[in-house]
Length: 84
Ligand SMILES: [Zn+2]
Image (tube, rainbow, N blue to C red; front, side):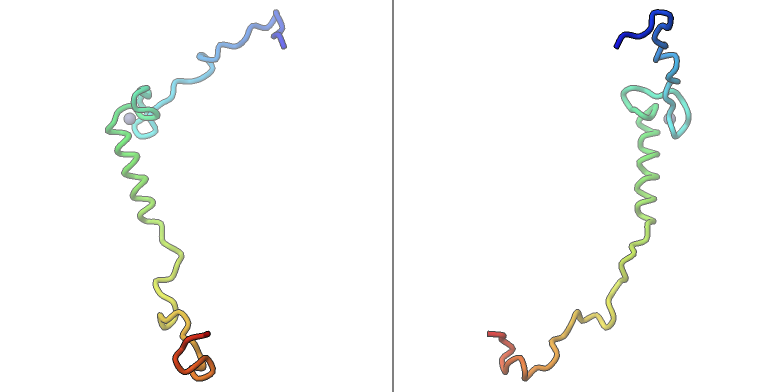
């Protein structure tokens, strides 16, 4: 439980390097974490939106013919189309 006396706990703050803005690389401001300024946050957000925009949807634009599934065999289903 207790740390060995011969080994003082390492200074976490020293080990941890100051976070930097992923956009411009400047030190992060706590207000705009993980960015340094609102501008950088906006830039990153813009990239994000652009990327999500560019992601192509895997769904085809339309099925073959377009009609989902026209009920085959009209007369066997009933003259009026009702099932019951
Ligand atoms: Zn920045």
